[in-house]
Picture 1 (tube, rainbow, N blue to C red):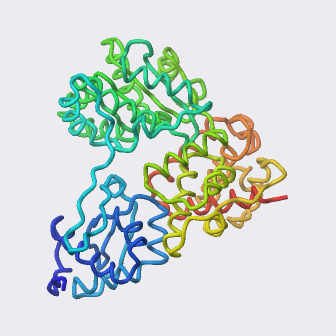
Picture 2 (cartoon, one colour):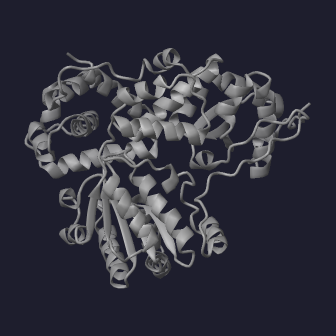
Amino acid sequence: MCRRVPRGRLGRTLTDDELTRIWEAAKKHLRGRINDSAFQFWFDRTVPLGLEDGAFVIGVPNDFAREWIERRLAKQVAEALTEVLGDAVEVRVVVDARAAEAPETRPAADDGSEPAAQAPPQPQQQSRGRSRGSARVARAVGDLNPRYVFDRFVTGPNNQYATAVAHSVAESPATAYNPVFIYADTGLGKTHLTQAIAHETLVQHPELQVRYVTCERFTDDFINAVTDKGRIEGFKQTYRDNDVLIIDDVQFLAEKQQTQVEFFHTFNALYEAGKQLVITSDRPPRELEALEERLRSRFGQGVVVDIGRPDLETRIAILRKQVKWEGFEIAEPEVLEWIAQKVTTNIRELYGALTRAVGFASIQGTEVTLENTKEALKDILPKAYQHPVTIEMVQAEVARQFGLHVNDLRGNRRTQDVAYARHIAMYLSRELTEASLPQIGSRFGGRHHTTVIHAVDKVDRQLKDGHDPQLQDLLALISARLKTAH
């Protein structure tokens, strides 16, 4: 029997150790309510985050896991927690990076002992100085995903040049290519490739100082430093005392003038000192009109490479590698080819479709077959469509969803509901059509293309910060309707 937590425990803040003990005890109860394969799949990578206002907060690695647990397993989780706590609680599930990085566990042994932890994959060790390098990796890559290494990155025609440049940078930083500017649409592997550079550089050159940060993190650190003037020198040292600095999603520097100035000086200091700079964005330097000209000029003075959408063969290879690394069992090889044919937008959605198919089969207690996969994905994959999506189609569907007239999106009304709908329409026009930024702006009442950039970046940020959980569902719904329209 698991020890119950005394009543009244809900009235105070719990320590991390207490939260962990409660959650581990609850999971033992859950094992009796859910079959072993489903339990391992959904709860292997979960972390307890807190107890707030009568709700026990659980962190999961992705939106798919959050959605599935909330809709299908929340009742069982709440009952298990109630057994342990002795008080009824609600369950709140959130996506948390710590869950994504949590090590997988092996199933419990027959003797009832605790499962043994399985270490996350690490970059392969090579010859010279590797033992010292491994220790450096553990200290230096705290913000890196241990899965984002070169061994797990699939190279195809769409990213061959970018991958070759990335390997060269990791082997010889600031030698052949500096700075490196990598651009691609969302979900095509920019973050994976740049984090792989960081991992491999630390393995091959353990004496170097390597820092990977998102543009948002750089901005937050700068704001905190200028708020407390005594910290600005510490901020400069943090970013300028690096041998390799990687900044992800630099497009988010738009409209942050002070941060752009500081980034410019940081860039210059590192470049003039012969240090390696790697920068990513969702568009090439010349299209970053919202950034200062001197920054765009710096970005373009080195090597600029793009990552395109993977072709069918590359998508199949990506799925096969994911199956191998995750240890998934696929009963019918046709499953991977079918998913690769249906999901063409980006790699993130490709992974999501595979995970959903495996999860569906696990819950059903069946093998991953083509028939089961089609059933699992029937609600999220758009049917084949005959006509390309146009800006006018996007405007009409967004207006319908928001109960507005198309002229509201094209006009000058700036009420909150109209502005929100207009931003979404501009974002989808950028994502689903072949129109350029100026063309999109002209179809929205002759607006300047920088207005479109602002709208696209704003929706992108909202998707990434997760503060508007309904936004992703809304975008998916509108996209599906547009793609199936005839």
